[in-house]
Amino acid sequence: MAEDKPYAPGLAGIPAARSRVCYLDGAIGKLQYRGYAIEALAESCTFEEVVYLLFHDALPTEGQLEAFRGELEAVRTLPPEVREVLSSLPKRGHPMAALQAGLLAASMADAGDQAADPDHHLRTAVRIVALTPVIVAAWHRIRSGLAPIESPAGIGHAASFLHMLTGEEPSELAAHVMDVALVLHAEHTMNASTFACRVVGSTLADPYTTLSAAVGALSGPLHGGANERVLAMLGQLEGEDQVRPWAEERLARKDKITGFGHRVYKVKDPRATILQELATRLFAESGRTPIYDLAVRLERELADLVGHRGIYPNVDFYSGIVYQKLGVPTDVFTPIFAISRVSGWLAHLLEQLEDNRIFRPTQIWTGDADRKLVPIAERG
Picture (cartoon, rainbow, N blue to C red):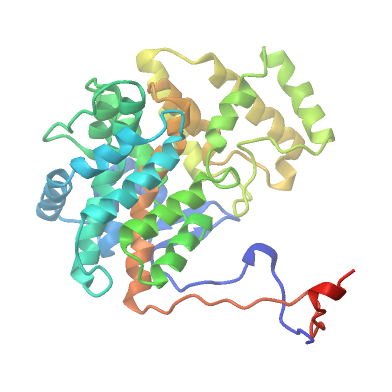
């Protein structure tokens, strides 16, 4: 029973797929979707353009983008069956669980031989991108005792979500900030939720079920939700003079400081840099958030204390501050991650199905073997 296969806990460093979707070099902070730098995409492209890029491996022309926006808008509506399911859920439940339930209900409402029809895969992918923010916004309003709002016609994906969530038309800057945030979270190579998506998709489960599995992986606190915890952490600090001694105490106890460090990045996450700039633009329009000053001070102190160890802010450190300023409820932060990341998950799913092989990893046996069965009457 000897085993000579190497064991990598959590499959760390083990390639699980060949992919053209996203490239990441954490040593120098390089993140690219389909070969395009995240900085360029965040500055020059809308989320719809990025989704098109992830799905088609090419940026759209003006005509293709207009058609793609029309496709999204045509299916950006809540099926009555899904609304009925959402209305029946416990109101104290987490929005991520509601999103999973909504996607599974949508699967049952959307007939089609999804395993055998590649064209249906792409149509369903577009529908899921359009439907995800509708589910998140509808659930928030339902649990608040309000009726879901239909998406207004002729506005972008990000603006539509904010309108459906709050019931108010967002400012141009607010819509832009949300749009850029969606671009920044759209894809990030082979993390836990993407791997879950590819594993479930490799069984030829329908795309809704596959995406529900990815949402489930993201709901775990080791993957999603860090931006919520960043706000709670910063809320413990009563002033900037407390920041360094607080940080030194946490480091002495070897406690993790939420929002800092990354399994891949050894420099500041490029997405954190962009989100920080977005935060300052929001503050210029609607007033500065005091918690931001604490965040900046903490970043500066930790750069001095642990920067030499490659521990810098990740994408979660400033994203919660941005969402809070946009008026987004704290427990909707991670669903916003999902609203964006469905595009990357679906790009990986479509890629997986191009030359699919079901995942079947092996294991290293650590138990007993060839044990003798003792009749129950003779067991001690």
